[in-house]
Length: 346
Image (cartoon, rainbow, N blue to C red):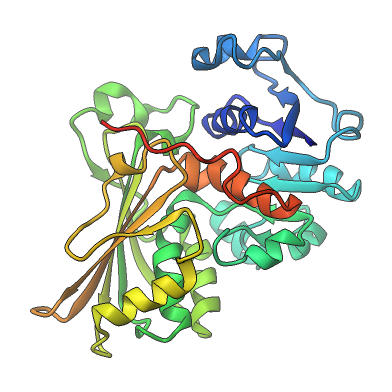
């Protein structure tokens, strides 16, 4: 049994962490940190957890409240995670950060894309990128894990093995992703109002989305050369879920069976990646509330393109669920402990 604290426990990701960890047989939640709701019962903040999670929110002191935990989940916005991560790292304890602060290895790239100075360079150097199915050996030995972003998870799981095994030529990669509104977080914003999101679909941050350098960093590692992508995210009027459609020129005449063999070699023993049958394609509803990533493949012989579709729940596999999966790796627990729930349907 380990003791875990959550900083930023009342955001959507923090709430999903709390829900998942409450049912994890190897975890005791030591504190639920929230400055906005300090002193309030957690079940009042999230009524789905009323009489289930009975703790009160507290505003922790970074000098005092980190001594009695084995792991800290940091679910704060980028820039705000760094002080907490530095404190727990200096105490030689383990931490999983769910912000973008430790994902991008080049601090100058981070500062350019996020407009924030990086104040934890030692920790950045030590951080392991937490794409669970790809870096599981490194994660199992890590003190600090940088949990991937939601869009990157939906893109890297399909693309990383194909680039690593030279099954595709990494030119003109076009990625079209659609995300539910919960991906924007809990803080109210004009563009997220019901009246403006309902019955509306829009592209945003075309070519400048902050997840681009994270995606390109990991694809470049896989390919062994610098990769550039064309990435267009969209906001779609549903609560949760990401569907990513990836278009790849099939210059090597790669066959469907070869792609399936590569995926099987990487993911056959991985419980949360599901490769769909030929002519079957992912749906967000089929993964909603679960830690699964579904992947479907189409070879379009007419246009000579490979089209790959993936679906995840942005709050689970794209955030809290992958965080729990990484925790399981770090402490030697069963990989699916606390994550056995299936998707909700309909």
